[in-house]
Length: 201
Image 1 (cartoon, rainbow, N blue to C red):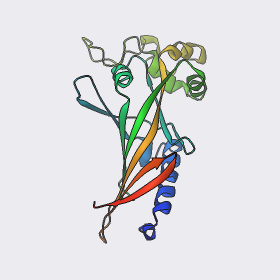
Image 2 (spheres, rainbow, N blue to C red):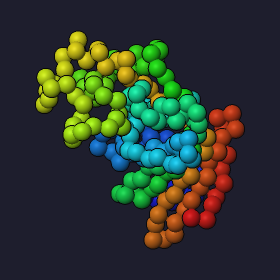
Image 3 (cartoon, rainbow, N blue to C red):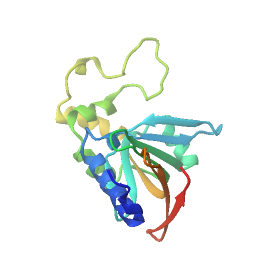
């Protein structure tokens, strides 16, 4: 990989290409970034999520989660969030600051639900909410679904727990690692127009 001739627009275009591929290719490094947010005590919680969509026009990143998850309450109170992507092969890290919007039981969730495979829908059929305390090691999936996918009709029960998390990109911190010299670029936005600033890595 080149340093893109230090062309800022070229770097920005490459970032968008990586996010598009990451949302579509389950084997791509950008498919499973780390998502972070703060709780009431201002403690940061991070977890690996599955990137489901990158919208170039809206500059948003989307993933799905369970509406019963503690992060839903946290994000309702504080919608500032952050993604970290890293691809060890190409030595590129992205730290992306976002503002989160929660979609529940609307057209966006319905469309995303229709595109969700049965084995993924199964996650939303847990009898207990995520992060619930349990007396034994278990996943909360009903016994009759252990080791198998639900039928489409069975899976529909999970829709009430299904949520789409949409994250509006505020700033991108791009880092490229190279023996010839690291490079770092901050990209912020004014009315969806990128503003570039070189930073010392």
